[in-house]
Structure formats: C-alpha cells, structure tokens
Length: 116
Image (tube, rainbow, N blue to C red; front, side, top):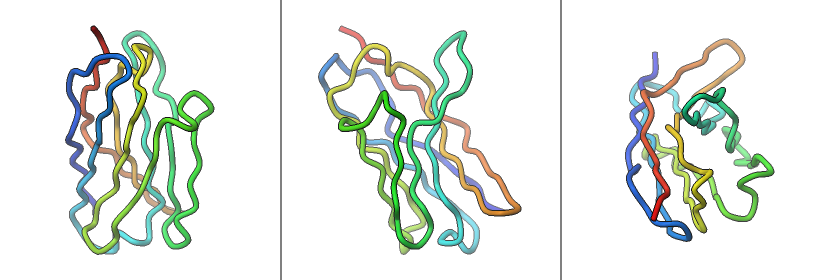
C-alpha cells in the first residue's frame, strides 16, 4: 500500500514558477514509475510527466515540454514537478500517481492557479 500526498500548489502570475512535491508513504517507493497528471475544470484528466523507477527516464506532454521538469528522490520517497513559465492554461488540479505492473495509486491533488 502506498499513500501519496501532494503539496506546493497555489496562485501564481503568468510567467511564474511553482514546485510541486509528492510524498509517498509505504514501502518500496523505488519500484514505482511516478507520474503527474492534471485536471482542469470541465476537462478530462491528462498526463503531464513521468519518471521511471530506476533509470529515471523522463517523458513529458507536448504542452509542458521545456517548461516543466520531473524528478525523484528515492531516498526521500518523493517526486517533484518544477513548473516554470506558467501559463493560464496550466491552471488545474495536479495529481501524483504511482504505478507498477500490478498496482496504481493516486494522491488527492493540489490546486495550481495561474492568473494575474
């Protein structure tokens, strides 16, 4: 069992930055591929970024490439999402996701609002 708790969301002006954190409790954090998703009002949840468990290979949605960076610290059971050059269209609830071949866990989400 893994519990995920996101933090770091808030209100930021366009062009600003935020760093989201996802703290994982439970064992064997390093076995999971970690992903960030987001869901804007009235829209479906969409993939943002992922990082694999060992090689830390990363993958990004086209809409955030070059602006967002995902990273993980297996020693701290944590994954991060550094978001730069934020745009109003990045406004959403951001969710942390831990996935293995047989398991799938979600956090409760953290709100990010980009507005002047």
